[in-house]
Amino acid sequence: MPTRDELQRARGVVIPDLLGPDPRLLFVGINPSLWSAAVGAHFARPGNRFWPALRAAGLIDRPVDLSAGMSAGDEAYLTGRGIAISNLVPRATARADELSRDELRAGAVRLAELVRRSGVRVVAVLGVTAYRQGFGVPKAIVGRQPEPIAGAELWVVPNPSGLNAHETVDSLATAYAEVGRAAGLLPVDGRG
Image (tube, rainbow, N blue to C red; front, side):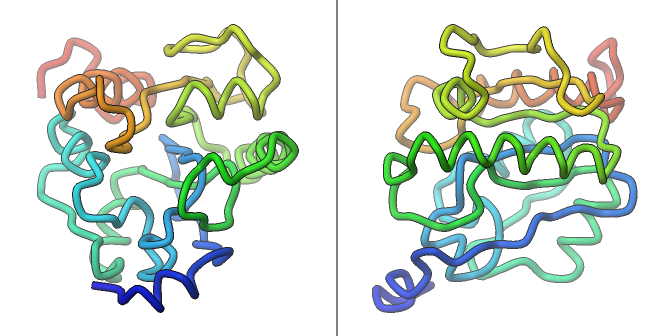
């Protein structure tokens, strides 16, 4: 567990993208939390619903706990399943509202380049507000977007943050399973 000083030193730290040789589904967070930056792993803060929702969706078949960092085994497991992770803004902050609109817009440009280079098939941005600001689509809604990004299907799904209180692990799992099916990671008929 990071100390208060370690969390403060994590402000502005960048976590590298999780990107294997054959990414099929790229989850894009808004930006890393201080906890995630302190331990060097995406969605690492205890209580974050991302990993439980991925498991409930069937995208992973075992618990993943990155609260102390990501092991080489966790990285190989996730990338071997075709799962990739990035952020619109790579720098860590205590809260997403510390990000500027310009940073979010620059993040959308950076994301398009990452998608182009990686050849990922489906991109799922976690959070409609960040998507609206970063991509300049003020009336966007959750779901598949009409315009692809660098040739990949583009989706907006709910953010797993506890601040997004009206979502549950089950509702997140439903949305994440939908993008998993679009990426070919889950059967289209919903049966595994």
